[in-house]
Every structure is written in structure tokens, then in C-alpha cells.
Length: 108
Image (cartoon, rainbow, N blue to C red; front, side, top):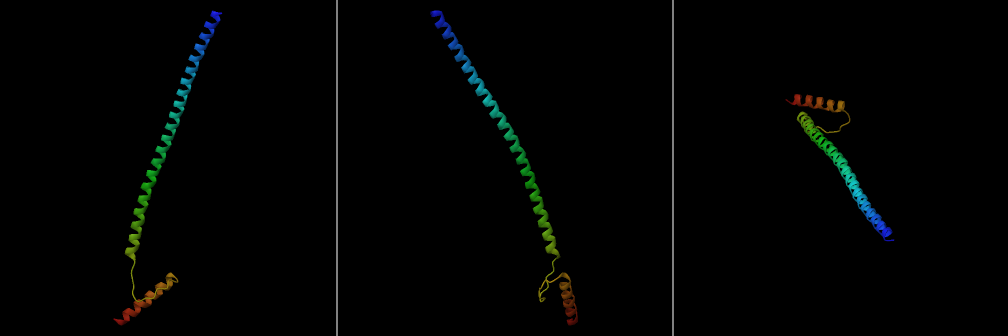
């Protein structure tokens, strides 16, 4: 009878050791999975951050180009005082300027 009790205690001890080993193995697997997920997320974040930086540089370049083009357009503008501004068409505006120029020339 005592042999049976010793055998049962031995089996119980082995089961406890296996239980601890399984728990440690489960913790290790969980840790590895967590680490893999973190690595994947970190890589995706780096990729997105790089794309964001590239887009930011492109936006800055586009803003500079837009400013330059607007500046050029403003430099080419001429202001005429005394001409009524009714933008019907470009040719209409052109005719008004020709008439204005002719009238100004006759006054001189």
C-alpha cells in the first residue's frame, strides 16, 4: 500500500513539473508572439513615417512652386485706373484697353 502511495506521490510530482514546464512554455510562446507583433507594427510605423516625411517634403516643394508662380503672375499684372471693370471676355477687355490707349494718346 505504501508503494502505491509513493508511486502516486511520484506521479503527482511529475505532473506538477510538467504543468510548470507547460506554463513556462506557454509564457515563452506568448512573449515571442508579442515580440513578433511589436516588430511588425514597428516596421509598419517606420514605413508610414517615411511616407509621411516624403509627402511633407513634396507639399513644401509644391507650396514653394505655387508661391513662385503666384509671384510671377503678380509681376506681370498691370493696373489701369479709370477703366470700368466688367470681365465679359478677354477680347472685350482687350478692346477696352485699345480704346483707352487711343484716347490717352489723343490727349497728349
